[in-house]
Image (cartoon, rainbow, N blue to C red; front, side):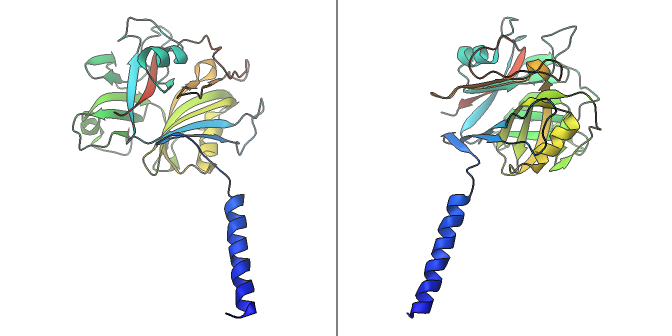
Length: 276
């Protein structure tokens, strides 16, 4: 091998190593199949500029649970209390709830034989379903009632069904014209590899802008639905020795806590447990 060829090979190896080191680490591995990412928003909020926290969950390693106060003694709990009492590794809002009946979801919600809300909300376009009746079905999926003609048959194949506003479906924005109101946001999504994403932004945005932000992040998002906004929007993560609590506010009353200080109680949460 000549000197010139050796120099070319050394230069190529050097460039490869430099590029590898320069590649940003997007996800921190918490456990097998469980990753935590904090992403700077591509659009600065008028109120603050905190990162967006996303917990990426591989359904092959984790099961999803819907916990409702209406099914468990009628008492709402903080996200941390739901996790500690029911052995969850993480929890996020399951849905918005009715002002006149705080234990009831604003959309259709069932968990096995327990029906929290039996009525399909005509304004809500998507269902997150999990706990399949037939083990050959995907562990969790999104069913879009605007795009899938057989959506009723699809949701009937699962023990657990949660209905909410759709934000993203098949990698595209769905609805949400621009609004003046800003909210911190809790959402749940799925990426193109079928990982489930628990999403929380303590910084408030209009939902229109937040959808654009999610589509711009390097997370390969395919589907997403809106869970909650304002002070109730919560994501609690407590696997092993890692505990993160983000507490959001709307544009009028904004704040953020890391720790276990939240006093907001939630009627319904989606949580995860490790598969045995």
